[in-house]
Amino acid sequence: MERNAVRRRRRVLLGHCLRATGSVVLLTALYYLAPLEGGFGVLTVLTLVLGLLAFTVLTIWQVHAITRAEYPRLSALEAMATAVPLFLVVFSATYFMLSESIPATFTEPLNRTDALYFTVTVFATVGFGDIAATTGTGRALVTVQMIADLIVVGVIAKALFGAMKIGMRRRGGAGHRPPFVDDGEL
Image (cartoon, rainbow, N blue to C red):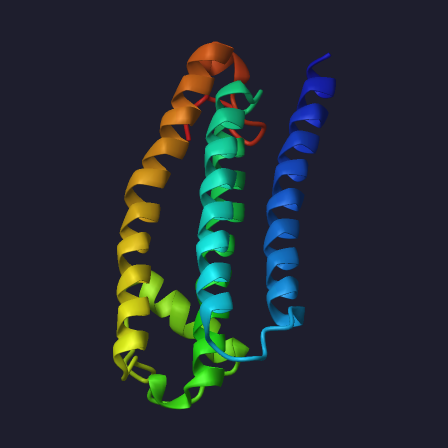
């Protein structure tokens, strides 16, 4: 019976890893395949707002799902592996469209990879300085991302991990430890 439990735990871990990886790959592919050419305008702002709304709805749904999950820790990690890339792709797409429309917005015109790189450097707060916003619109948008980054890192991460703790209590804690942990500690 113990051997079956180990196999099941491995399958669960593999499932969570595959779903998280699949989410990142799918979101990245959609970013590169989406028809984003056409410039920056009202539609771009609407897309950004709708993308952030989708991110918020996804996060709320994930918090709820984590509290009911059999393995809340793995579910919380999977949620972060889905939510953060979605958040980054939404801003990357916006920066790309802004750069297409107004090339002088950044120190250099951005292709999709440059826009993703810039978004990640802003998110990670490292700001390499090779790409920077140069117009008021660009700086305002980057400021919105920086504020949203703080919310994502602070509030949403706290909510996801708080949901994980609730899920652990509901499931009896150590009796439902993740498949890769033998002593119940992460």
